Image (cartoon, rainbow, N blue to C red; front, side, top):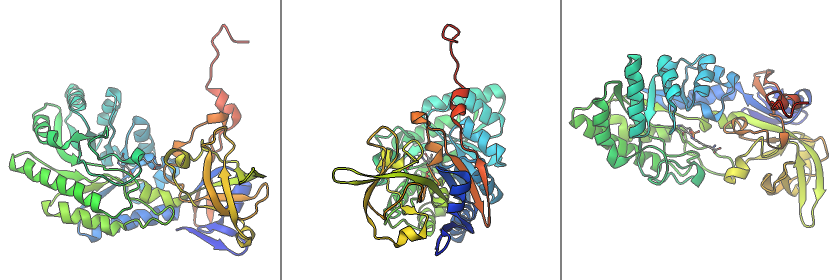
Length: 424
Ligand code: LLP
């Protein structure tokens, strides 16, 4: 989506040949398609509207917090889901009002809660009795009512990678299902809290149909009916994120299927619903461009060493994630492909992007693109091995612009200090 192959220009994003960006900006570089961001946001919104839901979309900022990306989504009318004051500052700077933003997270600090309330945050999703007490005390002291939803853990198996499943009883997230009703009643009695409803988020990169969503939302609906029967107010329900995308050959459910699951379970309650998608919107909108440093022959394997590494894109090392990897040059596509391991230069065997991947012969300086890298890519980068953070570029039609310049080696030193007894 947003990408096409051309006989002369090779891989093109919207109307810009990616090799042009790689040449002018250098590598490694993240490139995002504004058009794809817009198209996916609209498709998701249309699916929710089409199901007759009164739904708002709160983009999960953690997936990609680049200002340009946030601006594109802000212009589409997106709200935000944030997990830190840093993310709230980023979304507000990009024009997404705090009044359309939900604050999630299992360990919000008092000063973060204070800041969010001061900005008029739309909703705080609370995950523990301890946190609720803290929010109430801060809000009461500020003379405001904090809009709080309870994040419940529905104990369903989202059938995704263990490191990104969140809705099972053993996970650290949310409030145990059986504890939620008494806690909601107590919450309603606290001075600083306006009880808003309930929220859940069962995991990320969910591709095996929508059964897990359906099961979780059915439990929420049952819980809300119970709240109402006890006379407790419920204003809306937050369905979380998690809709997966095909990185390889997974058959990801379309947004219409998710909207259908929401409609079938929560639709009868007549409440506004919220969604917190990150990956589904941003993932397919981005690529990571890299250059081949060299091709080397191991004792029994061919290695393509790229100038991007696990410090840039950590998903393969961290989750055994599969990303499509393609040469930008169309001539390389024509060559006979042979298996190669595609690795980065970092000093760890885990710095491997792909094993035995069919790749043509490649020469130093040839460009490649890691596909579907718009979500959980740049945001998870580090400077391990003193590797500066890569540049970020936004493509929009036939235009492109650097939206975060490449970090320079001197930037890495700029924020370090020597104690006076070691200073030269
Ligand atoms: N809402 C909450 C409360 C979340 O914790 C998350 C993601 C989302 C929404 C957005 O989920 P999405 O629609 O993007 O699946 N770094 C991992 C993914 C971690 C997801 C964490 N929470 C990866 O690269 O696969």
